[in-house]
Length: 272
Image 1 (cartoon, rainbow, N blue to C red):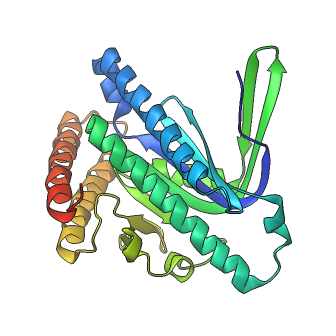
Image 2 (image 1 turned 90 degrees about the vertical axis):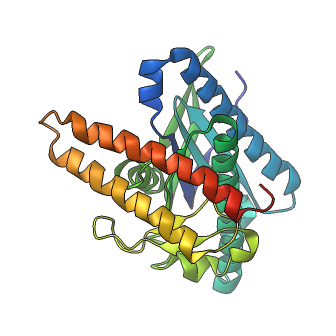
C-alpha cells in the first residue's frame, strides 16, 4: 500500500471528523453503513485532492486519513514556513490557512449531506501534532498520530459537538478565532461564538449549511443544537439508568433537525 502522506511534527490546525449516528446505522443495516463509509472516504479524499491540486504555489497542503467512521485532516506546512519570523507575515499565512481548511471541511460536510443525507460532526484545534508513517511488518502499515492538537480536536468533536455540529477552538494561537480569521463571510464561511454554559468559552461554530449570514437562520440552528445538547446531557447524567424515552427524544429531535437543514439549504443558498 502506498502512503502519500509525509511525516509531520509541529504546531498546526487539526480537524477531527466523525459520521453522526453511524453506529446506529451499522447495527440496523450493514449494507447501508458500507455505502455511507464509501461515500465519506470518497468525498474526503476528493475534496483534499481538489484543494491541493489547485493550490500548489501555497506553502502548505491539506492532508488527511480516514479510518472507520472518522477522519483526521491537518495542515502540512512546507519547510520554509518555520523560518518566517515576522509576526504579521505569519499571521497573514495562518489566516489564509484557516480559511482554506474551514472551506474544505465545509465542502466535505455539504457533499456528504448531498450524497447521503447524513451529518458530520467536526472539531478543529490549533496545537502540537505529530504524524509518522511506520512500516511495522512487510505489507502492514501503521500510522503514528499524537499531540495536543489531535487530542483537543477529538475532544471537541466527541465531547461537545452534537449531530452535524462544526466547532473550532484555537486556544494556543488566540483567545478569539475571529482575531485570526477576520471577516470571512465573503467566502461563505459563517462563524459565531457559541454561547452555552455547558461548552467552554471561546469556542466557535461554523454554520456549514449556510452560504449567507442570516440571524434568523442561525437562531433556528442554534435552537436545535441547544436542545440536542440538553438531551445528551440528560442522557449522560442518567448513564446507569435505562431511559428509552430520552434516546427516543434524541432520535426524534435529530431527524427533525435533518429535515430542517433541507429547508435551510434551499432557502439560504441560491446556488445549492
